[in-house]
Length: 119
Image (tube, rainbow, N blue to C red; front, side):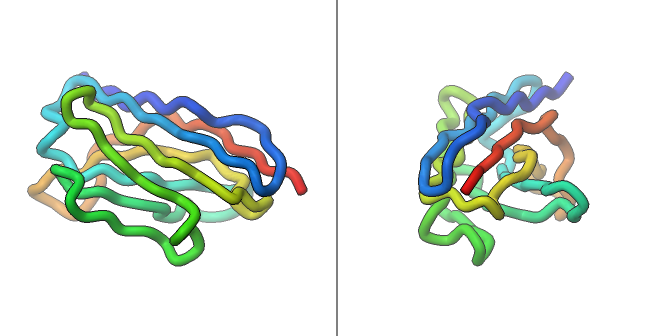
């Protein structure tokens, strides 16, 4: 059974930082492209960041470039998202997701962790 468990969310002030973590189990983690997504109230889920199997390639949404950093540790089956200079518009539930090398869709999702940024 595949599980992705996020942690690290919270309520912070604008300009603060958080480090979100996602621990994976039940899958061969190093074979999966990992991504972070977020969904704000009343809005569609959106891509935030992604990282390749060995961590050599990363991708970011324009809205978070320069503020968010994705990283992975294949020895620990974890992927993290360092979020700096938070803005109220970053308020959302953040999800990690895993995508197999055999398709374009993300196969597995975590339950999400809430990030709330107040001005």
